[in-house]
Image (cartoon, rainbow, N blue to C red):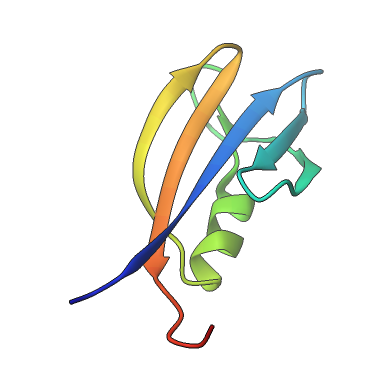
Length: 82
């Protein structure tokens, strides 16, 4: 039976163009929030951070509002090595 590991990531936007994140393993950092060119309204994207998690094998399975930010839930197959 397939085993999974899960990761919770919290994304927060502070000052315009700046954001921060922390995850359920205790890692944290900052990220640049990039405006989407040509959008009618001001939209921000954290695609670079999401692409990095995807390259590590994480798949986004849920997203929900969390205070002033968002809570993202990711999963990937659990490692077979202890």
